[in-house]
Image 1 (cartoon, rainbow, N blue to C red):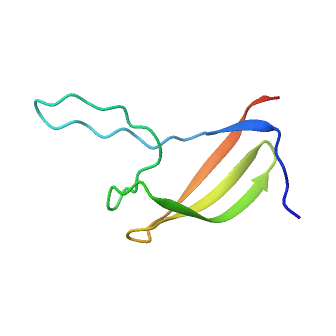
Image 2: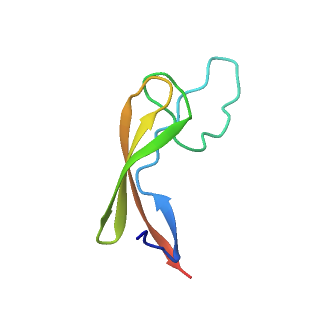
Length: 77
């Protein structure tokens, strides 16, 4: 049986923004980007609830590189 969460979750450690090329303006970096290939398409491989947060293991759909995200509650509804 799947759990339901009545809260808004956010990434605790967002990925670092990359520096823009010389002479160009930086676009806002929103979302997760693969550090290996730069792809923004991920699939969730594993989800582990922890006290006050959720850990998610994600894999890049392009190169297979795996990253872990930590999400915590911003506010309960």
